[in-house]
Length: 275
Image 1 (spheres, rainbow, N blue to C red):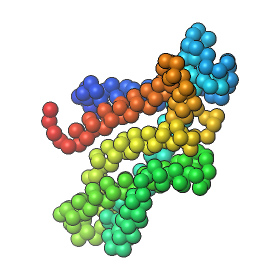
Image 2 (cartoon, rainbow, N blue to C red; image 1 turned 60 degrees about the vertical axis):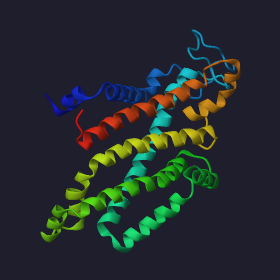
Image 3 (tube, helix red, strand yellow; image 1 turned 90 degrees about the horizontal axis):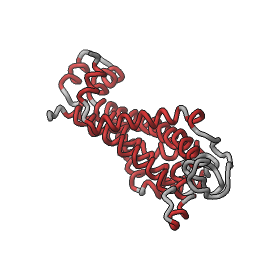
Image 4 (cartoon, rainbow, N blue to C red; image 1 turned 90 degrees about the vertical axis):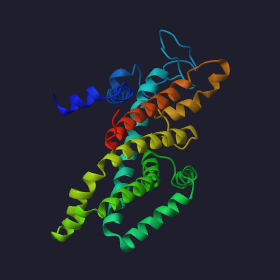
């Protein structure tokens, strides 16, 4: 039996359910053009058509098919959040490892820069930056990634500094190993578990941040389908007892909970605790 199959067999039901949901979201995002009945911005009916055979989940404020918009939103919202998380994680982890490995003025400069960026509430700073730079997918990704990288930096630096004082690292230095070799072969393998878990947590925070920005009108530009913007655009239906605006909100909540289920299991495995 392969290690992957062994790990899957030992997964608790919550983590297994979370993994299945995540895979379903990824499959939906990848196959959105095949699964969506209509185009992303295609107007196919009147405003706020009810649920029925023609439109399974009705239409939105412009007459676009809600089911199609939800499917396309999986590609846009999840895809942008994943790209943003990857950039933020790469920047933060690299800077944290450099600060821990080099120390001195490099560590001091990077740490003070991060302290300054974290002194301002992130949502306020994000709103100010996006208001100055203007809307756009690229600006959204860069701003959110730069601000979220500060959290990754703190974790990577703290974890790496704990490893840098270990005896095996000192032995590697005495053997004449360079900083790059020590970081790649001694430090990084020993902090991979918390970093992997942090990647999942960062994805959740970035995903929620982008959805919140879209709800406020500073997220993905129209006519791109985005779950946060869909909640805002269809919020008026709540007054009439229609649950349609809750559907994109449910998509956001289900994915966030599923990712947290998997992260909890990964942290439990990394901790070495037994059931």
